[in-house]
Length: 74
Image (cartoon, helix red, strand yellow):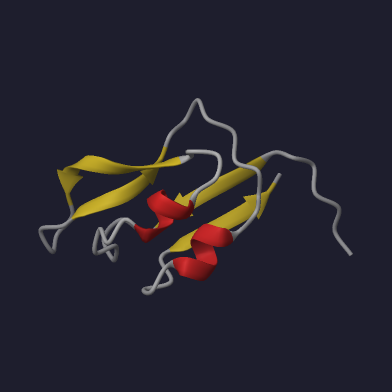
């Protein structure tokens, strides 16, 4: 079993995100925000904040209805 290091990377498939903001609402560490930019579908998408640490709780991956978020333990 892999051991969590406390350092995680969040990846958002921005072109598939519909900007529902559920991941942002449920992120305990405030790692995700709504982008000012639009994707090819015309939606503002979720994106990780670079200077905020991800705790690796994986709630964002569970709550995302479109499965566009991945969390990797470094």
